[in-house]
Amino acid sequence: LCVLIPVKYLATGMTYLDMSTYFGVPKTVCHSIVDRFLLSFPKRYKETWVRFPTRNDMAEMAAEFRNARGLPNVIGAVDGTHLQVRGINDYRSEYYCRKQMYSVQLQLTVDARCRIWDYVVGWPGSAHDARVFSKCALFNRMEKGDIAPYHILGDAAYPLKDFCLAA
Image (cartoon, rainbow, N blue to C red; front, side, top):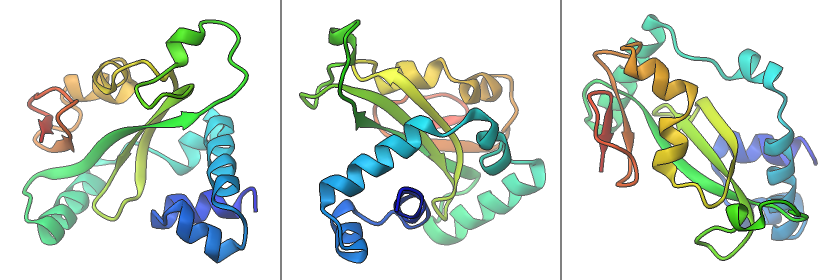
């Protein structure tokens, strides 16, 4: 279950409540397992399973977004969430977030089929989505023009840039 639950969550976007029913375990157990999995996901696997798209990938991703959502030249959507953590001893206030809990940030960038092609995990919960985004490797690559002429979508927390369309 320690691998099945996170894989099901990442592959389908299934809610914790639905996964709870599916796997026959409490919702809190699903949440805890997913959090632990994402926090321990080794960097070497990121390069194997989660990779920056090639130019051909980008063209396909843009076509998928256009076909599914009517959005031209969009190759991804980015957003952040909080993974609740316990046992924070140092810098406690840094990890206390607006959701009234101690957390670390998880930022995901996905394609039109919700496949993850970039993630950042580990920033303290008090960090704003825009700060996490502006300090990540993906942002630096996009600033250099690595996805031009394409764009990603973000909510109002994200900066409006040539490469990032904020809602």
